[in-house]
Image (cartoon, rainbow, N blue to C red; front, side, top):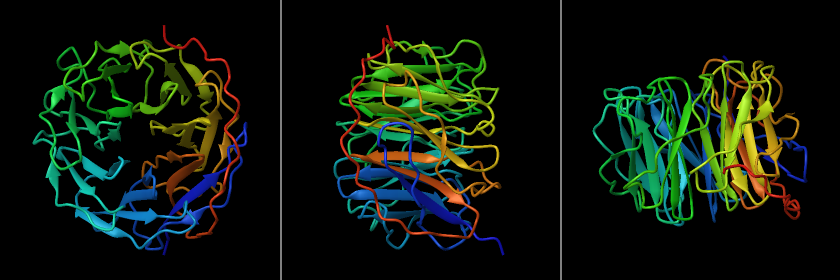
Length: 373
């Protein structure tokens, strides 16, 4: 019998490069069939995944990942990848895609219990997941409609009621249905991003909770994008990251809320990036982290402390060849204050506990690069 674990890893970010620590198992049930993603609030981390009985599951850690509570079932769904985001008092799990309508559940008690299913819309959603993000106003989801090839967004203050969908892309039918969309929030701003039919990445911003969107801005123009885009944010701006057809990982930074973006910067080369899996990304006062699965099923991560102007050498953040080879395994990354949590689905059958690591002061801010004009 081949066992699977969901593993987590704490990394101390004492400058550059990253220093890996020992993984901690979230589950021992050997039934996980999706990647694992996590979010953070003031109380701790919540992880979510799907098991082989088509249940979307969650587990909460109140002690910085040292241990995880008993898993709780959110709902049953044939969707592939549940996504999760946390606000001040609410956690929202979203799911859908693969011709399923976008749906959500919300929790007011750190995942101890979950609401009934909430339909975000009744569209037939494309892609493999329904990305969700939060800012200081509430939650935003983005998705691609399978029939119209448009990117849509919907807003909710608390996950209980969602606004009527709004088309994000300016040109109707211009969004690729082969990849999922992405979103990120900061202050009162949301950014949505997607791949167009020419395999270029586009982004648009909204400052009114998704009611209207700016004209899309292209992040790439050579038709080489090969993954959904990942978005993350800090007080200094927004970072986008993605893979290309050569297996290289790139990033681009915006200091003006996504109205313009800097030239792409290489994160890592094709020797380490596996296929068209998207990168996990997160940001804090310590910088931005990107994480991914390698061609030998190892989780790698890289740190930028200068808004994506340069990146540390990739380091292994999982045991070598320990990620599940049978699923498109995306490595999650999630900051909470001065700690960064990485998540993935493991196939080794081994679980090792680790205390969370307390970090020192954030790195000294570098000169802000002129990314975004």
